[in-house]
Image (tube, rainbow, N blue to C red; front, side, top):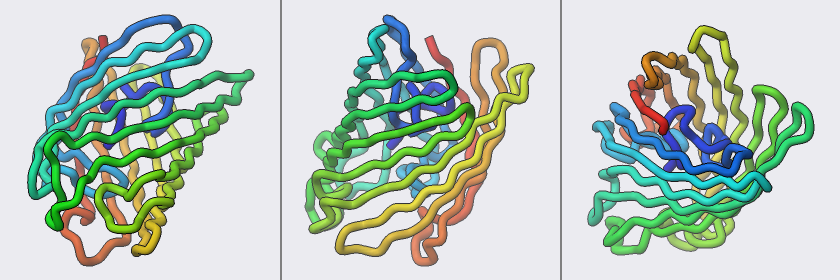
Length: 226
């Protein structure tokens, strides 16, 4: 459930992750494939490939909006995720900050219990050079989990440019689920920019023991930004 592919995230990261836009008055787009769409350590595609893409608009004031989508395979009904988000991002020297709201839509999607999986989160992020931290708060039930509004996610990430198109990244996250069981997830990866494409190789794992979709795995990705 990310707003971008690889480094094509407008950011956070989220961000890596899900949570910002370039400080320029411009439109951008991204498209890509991943061998497994994982979000917060969980496969969203039953460990199968996903097609993803999105559009972003960033104003030079720091305001931004965007939409991003991916094929999924974790709901009993529905095979699409669409994320719509907006916020404000800016920087002061090496320090950056980002605040916004992210709406996850699952058109026609239902969980195995027949619940709606649509989720609304607000987030705030800070960064210093190649290190970032992002906090997300769910105003609705979290992806269909009953009575889970108020759930929180903590994301500590680092993305370091090695030069010559190579980069390395690391992430540690904590998902606290209101009236549910929380868990930790982590990821390390390498990336390479070549011929206008971004290639990635990531190792992902969690401390969840009873779900195959949260097992350790290696994910390959390729994307292009426009």
